Image 1 (cartoon, one colour):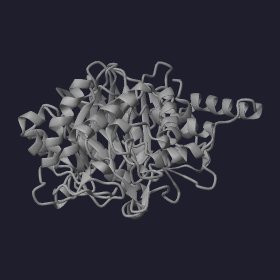
Image 2: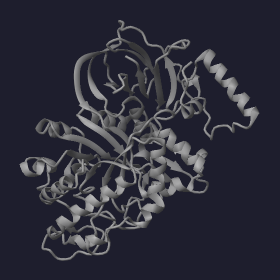
Image 3: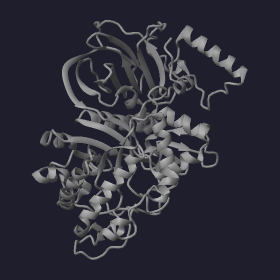
Image 4: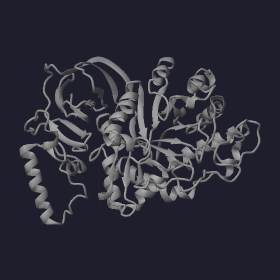
Amino acid sequence: MDELPVKTFFRTFGYSGKPPDPNDMKKVLWLALIVVFAACSCACKGKDPETIDKVPDPGPVPESSSARVYVTTFDKSAEFSMYSVSTATPGASSHVVSLTGDVFQRIQGFGLAVTQAACYNLLKMTKEDRTWLLTELFSVKDGAGASLIRVCIGGSDFSMDEYTWCDEEGIEHFAVHPSEEQYLFPVLDEIYRINPDVEIIGSPWSCPRWMKMDVAGKGERFDSWTSGRLNPQYYADYAAYFVKWIQAMQSRGYRIWGITLQNEPLNHGNSMSLYMPWQDQRDFLKVVGPAFEKAGLSTRIFLFDHNYNYDGIAGQQDYPLHIFADEEASRYAAGSAWHNYGGNVSVLNTVHSRYPDKEILFTEASIGKWNYDNNKFAGQLAEDFEQIILGTLSRWGCCVVLWNLMLDDEGKPYRPGGCGTCYGAVSVSHSTYSYASLDRKSHWFDILHASVAIRPGAVRLGTEGYSRAGLLYQVFRNPDGTLGAVILNKSQDADQLLFNGERHSVRVDVPAESVVSVVWKD
């Protein structure tokens, strides 16, 4: 039997707390009995195997098994539960999925936002509990191997205060803010110990207040964290700010893959915010791009970072496309970043068709009382996996990062004027901050399922074959030669798919109402 990742093993058998103390011999014997039982029966399909036994049992797992299947059901009877199956030479089936030979975009990765609020809650946990959770998410060997995170450049609506790294007027006063030393860096250090290949997307919620002018653009000083506009007088200083931030982060060993120039540039009502219409972003890009080149930075610059519907603002439709159309500005833009709080993912079809050389990122979506309480876990998992994960990837997207890694069970901490109804991908009890109190919500499983099957550097492959209503899937080739597939079954009917690679096939049971990931050697 293949060696299971540590955390996956315990959750497969329904153990919701921390792993047994290895010094407790009774628990060790108990664990050994489970291992023996699992090796004999291979019934490791979830917390309660009977609850998903609606599909044919793949049978005993031979020692040479080289495929792993991960299952999460809408009713949570299986939560990222793993079992192994053997591969075979490509075969025939009425439910076969074959590769067409088409190769599409390269994938950068998947992850969650590590906000200051998330760090605050993580640091309230014991080191042991925190390490277990971060290992579950980021470890390539013992977890899902999430590879991408988003961090705020300065404060946000989920920080302990409003701030930037240069609040005293004059770029010569740029310095690491003390709160980053207190909250962000300890968590990043631990993440990098678990997975040193994690990469970061940085996004500012506001420039320093001394760089702001009125929204009308008259050049009048605007001394507020909320709203305002970047004064062209300070374009060079703000470009230097980005350069210094990247250099400071990279000096600590953090890999800054990309930045966006402004989080939600058309939303200037957030607790920390800045109005940056496309005309401003185009002009600023012509300053910050050369500054990156002069500093020798390879960090990518991404435009927009906002909603599919451009918040319905007149003159701001097709925001990034206007900037791409400017030859001077476009040479500094690697692509565009998107949120889904308004509009439809189909907008990405237009973006790619117009500028196929530009990368597409999905950088933020939230769950909270407005959607999660209505759809519950099942509805939100199905909706987001279809619209965000599969929807972005099928439209040439290279990554998905969701918001927010962790909040407590009251949605805290958040800033006044920020989102008081948001949930984290993981919720922790504010009274115990224990591993046992964690509530893993739909966004957690979205990222786990994508990360485990689709590794950084993978490419999306064309497929043909079996299809039916309510069943969606995509296949990817990973850099190590393995194939990974992600599957969504929204229907109440179980299914079985035979994925044919070039040299090996794998037969996958797909329970009713489930998300399934599979990785196999080709």
